Length: 190
Image (tube, rainbow, N blue to C red; front, side):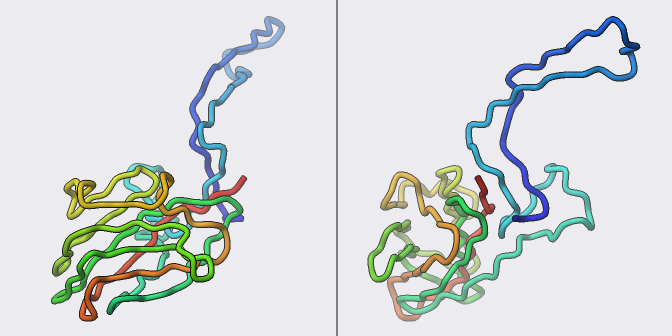
């Protein structure tokens, strides 16, 4: 397990128990009941910390810890090892470096030789443009603008990474295509 974990929860009710035999203006017992729509504990994984999330300067690594994959040619295969014991959904960031481009990027998860999950974009990413496929929010943007119209997916739960080793394949349309691919995700525990 990771050092720090959290869950996305909200307070459903708060009950105060009054005890007239005690001096209660200093301390008061309160019973809180929470609703947790996603019943998982989260760890940082390779995701970046966000401004305003309570992280203090100097306590955490900023920018995420995931190593970018240099994808080039028509196919690049790699293994993404995910901690946790529950599936997680990444943000996939595809950025061609200076002077590079890539056409019709597709990112797949394989089981042996069978494609079990896939997301794809129809179009060209040019010099330093960034395609973001946010599988948690089900959103696709190109340089901050909506790009969902040019996007396709295999399953309703986009690109679900399993705990342990995941065989990932990046496919481009041309042999001269090149881009950096990052998978940013939180680890999940139940």
